[in-house]
View 1 (cartoon, one colour):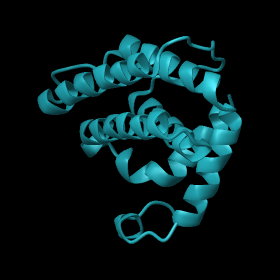
View 2: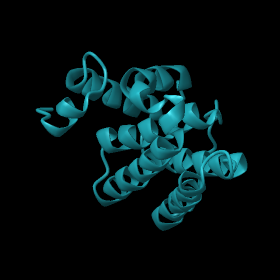
View 3: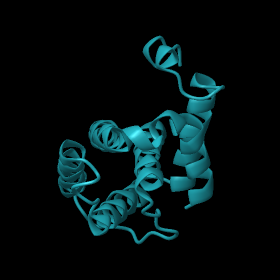
View 4: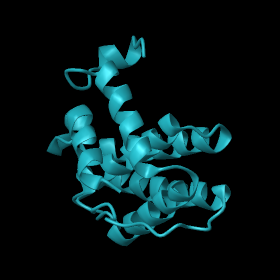
Length: 157
């Protein structure tokens, strides 16, 4: 998996959320993103949906400092097990956002396990590097100058 390329895509389109004051809020938003995009992928698989899941994982990686795995084992988890793992991360990051980073640390092992489960599952379904390319192309069209709320709400692509 080309983690460097994925992280560059995320950095280009997520700089607004990587700022220190809002870290917990954006962790929660991006965990919601992983869950929602994963559900969409499970319901209707496509490279774009897989790319969106990867983007969410990359965003969580950047904001938590927990690296994405350089290599992936194919996971034999069912779609329900994968979604449950993502929901466990969402629940944990909800608590981090609620209590604040000064009171509750991010469970890095849970983040690593979630990455391994979600990304390992996607590896059994799609070519990960093709999915990264798909999300890169889509987001370059949508946000050529980086993310903006206006472009997100009034998007054409």
